[in-house]
Structure formats: structure tokens, C-alpha cells
Image 1 (cartoon, rainbow, N blue to C red):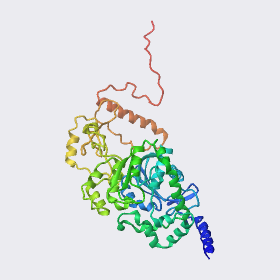
Image 2: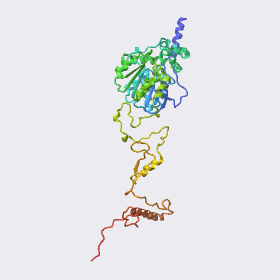
Image 3: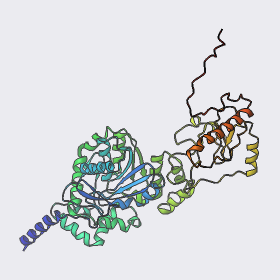
Image 4: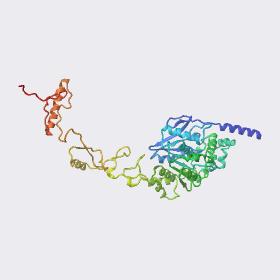
Length: 478
């Protein structure tokens, strides 16, 4: 009986370990074929590109709060890695190297260059590998709870560790896919507070396959062992931010020290936070990421003014209330306002500011100008040859003033000639073209007389006929 049970266990393990999954009802707006697999993705917002890469036993849904915040200023791309979430789950093709190839194909499909990449867990390792192999694709990196130089920096709880073992692992994971309480026990050590463990996180833990779970973890441990990934990261020259929770029980928080020594990264340790800072400390985490991506210190200043006990959505709402209201997808600040990190001495004075009016909610703002004042300014114009445009701003950048543009004339400025009565009449036949030309000559002659110029001596000549200049007249013959 014991031998029979062992044989059944081995057969079940082999069968489950080779189980694959292919998504159904593929839609062009949500799925993309990359590396031979269908990958689910989402795009939101507008502006510079930011790619969000989830970690092990997770999906792109974990970035929902951060993606909604970033979409106000960036174009946010999220995807489900191969083997997780709603993407295809093949038998092989997992680990940091395969993941970086998938990210490169994803960025190449959308034509992304110098994009900011935010990676959690193994997603951060994939971002580092992508930046080392393709420096032109990545512009900034945010590493969230990412192991650096030692496979021992990854520590799994006992129940989750059983799901990664060679023989009993596939059976144990298949059991957890059908038992929600077991999956909750798997994911409980990922957060410090039990209330921060959302139902989406528990569901994502059961959407993978035994092969994807075990092979992804095994390949990642081998690829970061002995500092292999850290040595490759030494050639990265882009800014790096490393964020981790001080109470992280999955990845050693001291891994951030290795990143700081390797790529000169900015290190942030979040207090009273576990392995999922995007869910446990949403407000502070979003503020840290926004400050790093935009260089605007106001995001961080707003979050530091609130007590440490206020976390989650209340903390995020407080940050939104403290931050000034900004139009969707601003690419630059308003003229005269220094960009973060730019000294005020480099800002152009008001007289040199560009004449720029930005739309608000799809339309231009109304003018704060009285009609009488505009007419007074028009009448006070010293130059009669200046034409004024009522829908423009002045060249000094002050809204409400009307600029003046010189009107193109052939001679000096003066009164307009009288418009002939037959100007808008179409001639009945081609024979009337000569009379048409004669009336035009009379109009031009009248304009020249009013300007004090001499009339054309050959006023009856047809302008359409070529005439040769007259030479000196010969005197009478002797």
C-alpha cells in the first residue's frame, strides 16, 4: 500500500508539473502575443512611459492603486508575466533572463525608450537585467523588495515552501488552488497586518501552475546566486530607487544595501511594512515613487506632514488634498515656475516667457478683459499700419493684452483704395476680361494718387501684354 501511494504521488506530480494553461476569448485590446505566449496587458493615462512589473505569485492587479495615481502624469503599462495572472502558462520559459526578454519584446512592441520600470520581487530583477542588456530602453528603475546578490535573501514560509518542492510540490500547489483557506495561509507572511491582505492577492496566488511557481523561484535563485545579477547591474548608469519594508519576511531588507553598493541606488525603508508596500503603505509608497519619477519634492513633503499611524487610503487621500490640483498629463510646469532641481536664476524673466496658453478640460480658459478696455487699447495704437488680433495674448506673456502685428503693404501705410463694384462679379465671357483689367488699373491709379505718387504714364497699356522698354527718341533728320 505504501509503495502504491508513492507511485500514485509520483505520477500525479509528473502530470501536474507539466500542466499548461492557455487563455481563452483573447481580445486585441487586452492581450498581446510575445515570445510565443499570449500576455495580458493594460494601458492607462498619458505622458512619459512607466512599466509596472509584478513579482512572484502575483499579477498586474497588485499595481492598481499605484497605476491610478501615476496615470495622472504618465502613460502606465502593466502586464501579467508569463505563467501568472491571466497570461499563458507554458511548461518552461521562466526566470529572470526569460522575463527580461519578455519585457524587451513588450517595450519594443509599443516603441518605448527611456521608460521608467517599477519592479517588485522578481520583477525588479527582470528590470535590472533589461537595463543592463538594453540601456536605451530603461530610463529609471524602482526596485521594490528585490533580492540582490544572494539566493539566501529569499525566505519562504513553510506551507508555501512545500508547494515548490520537486515531488510533493505540484500536488500541494494543486490542492491549494482549490482550497482558499490554504492560499490565505500561504500569503499571510507577505504582509505585516492581516487586514492588508486583499482578496485579489489571495486569488492571484492560485492562478498559476506548479511548473510556473517552482521553476520561476528556482531559476531566480540560481540567476542571482554568487552576485551574478549584481555584477551585471554594475554597468547601469540610470537612477535607481530601492524600496523595501523593514518587516519584510520574504526578502531580506538588507538586500537594499547590496543594491546601494552596486548601482548607487537611493534606499528607502518603510517602517511597519512587510513585503507588499504598495498595499500596506499605499500613500507613502506612491509619494516616494512620484517624487523619484518627477523630481517634485512636494509629493514627499505632503506625506511627511501627516502622522505615521495614518496609512493606506486615508493617507493617500491626505496627500491628494495637500497637493495642488494639476491638469491631466502635464508635460512641463508653467512658464516662470522652476522645474524641480532647476535654480530660480535659470528661469526666464516674465518678459522672455513664451506666449503659451494651455487648454483646460479640452478648451481654452476665458479672457479676463473688458471690451471697452480692449477698444481703448486699439484706438491708442500709435501705428496705423498695425493690425490687432483679438484672440491672442501679448508678447510679454500677460494675459488680456492684445498684440499688434504689422500688415503687409506694397508701399507706405495709407487709406485703403475703394473696392470696385464689380469685384465679386464673374465676367459673362472672356471678352470682358479686358474691362476687368481696366477697372483694376483705375483702382491702382487712384490709390497711387492718394499716396502722392506719379501716375503710370502708360496707363492704357494692357498689363497682360509684353512691352519692350522705349529707347531714346531720335531727333529730326537734318
